[in-house]
Image 1 (cartoon, helix red, strand yellow):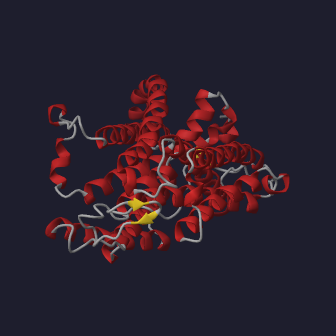
Image 2 (tube, rainbow, N blue to C red):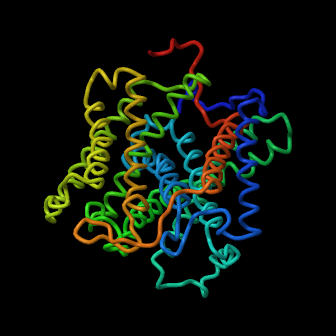
Length: 404
């Protein structure tokens, strides 16, 4: 980045009223988590033998990691495709990714029936090599560590500019070492999400007839990979737009437009793959006057709307419309992932597109909802706190007129 594009700490009061509100919501959710560890899952959640995961996995893990995939998507553009103009978005996307993936990994521990056994995960002799979740768990945990290591350059830069000699010495000692390690970290940051994002889709292949035929198919790994990139780019554009309004963050409209055009191609690719799989495998017969068809069309509409918008010159030239398209892309990926993991899942399965009656029903409990809301609040608080203390956000040059 050039000197006028250098990230700076946002500064300001750390514990202002919005931050206090976020921390209060997190504190309430923390009390629920403590209660869950004390009495078990039953009194806190509505999970059953039929619905062995509630909203924590589909939302806190599968959707959160989709939002955090902006780090993956921006890394692909900057380092694999050598599009250096997007470098100003790297620190924002990496920090969001680190927070989102950490919250997802933490939610898994909260949802485990015997969470204390998770501490054995690093011990290879105890690995269950026949588990389809093993690869996902190892990749996600490894990627969490890689993401936080990628956040360290902002911390090192902050220490280098500190008035305390000890912090400056720390930056002088570890800055060059971290710089040498970055190419290897970036390589891992591209390989690991490619593996586990596709595996999140591949995991549901084993559910077989328990997922409605319109959502179950051989392309699940590919669709999850494409949708995560679309969600990630949408998250980066949406967040950067908000930061421009709140913190005067640098958000060049041509830059965000270019990122959104890449997203438009991904959205179209998703639609072609999704519809192509349904047609080629003869699943059109499941369409009719029913809830599955309505949800299927709604989902496709969510993907199609931002795709159409982002191919329009009037949309990519307008910040407000670009922001709306980014939010729609985020919502589309989130709805698709929740549908696969929860909405269109039935414990007794589907027979010719009709749910087989079962004795299990599920609706999120208050405790589950509070934990999810608290996780989101904590994530926002961490992003605000780190951005205020360390150089993460590139601020608009006061000498340069803001673009509209």
